[in-house]
Image (cartoon, rainbow, N blue to C red; front, side, top):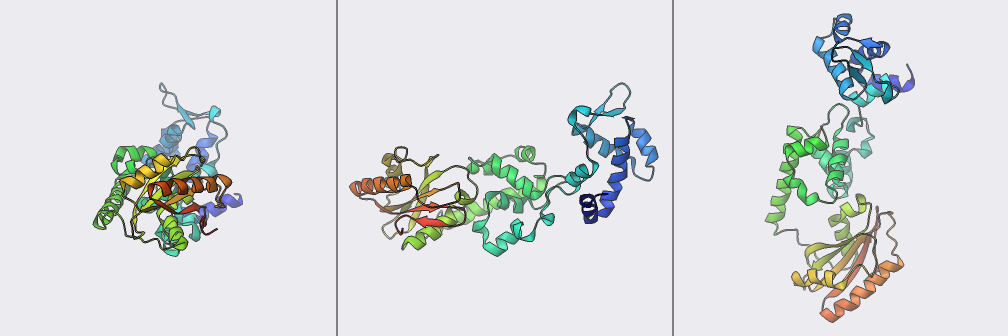
Length: 320
């Protein structure tokens, strides 16, 4: 047994050692019949052997001959590794086998919930995975499926989420929906959002890093948003304006100030992210800021600042 195999078996020796001899025996057989395997491993429950055979068949490793009921290995699928198959089945990418500082719950406690990616929040709600599919993997799959339509997640059915990840069983589905509904009620009780006053660039950066944490952590493309503010510089609402590479010709003042006028805003913040992770403003970022600032003067809506979000920090164009 190599090092990786011994380290894997030490995690859960009883389960690993129970599966391994059966799977190794199956691999040695050119043609196998489940009943023969059950007789050889008579100390095991017959259903346990059947479950292993069916799983290998469903994954495409085994091919069943309907007339005889025997199975053969599918040579077209490539070389089968017993240890790799057992590791994937029994451990996958389980949270408990990850470094503590990378686990969603530990990251939440250490850094605050606002620093977690959408996938990590979902993983916490899923709570526990299934063989070969950890809660972290489930969170990543669901977050990816709803990356551009997160507002549709509350309306997703149980079967839809289960089709995305087998770890979203009934309990996990209920936890996700309960978490979403609780968030909605908290938001509703606070009049839609917690009142936040922007007193300067530091406040603007703090608000944007919290409110737009998803942009810094999750996206692979640029998004341009505005935050509308009242006469006391309190946040009214945020609006997505464009998705894609930021360019002065694409960010039209009409779209920006339409949202501001709709909210009866006295001023606005401009916000966008750099998927590269480096928030250093580009020449285009400066051009967009200048153009919208001049347009805002004509309409009586001040552009207080333009915040550029990177992965670990944000920059105020006004302050720099």
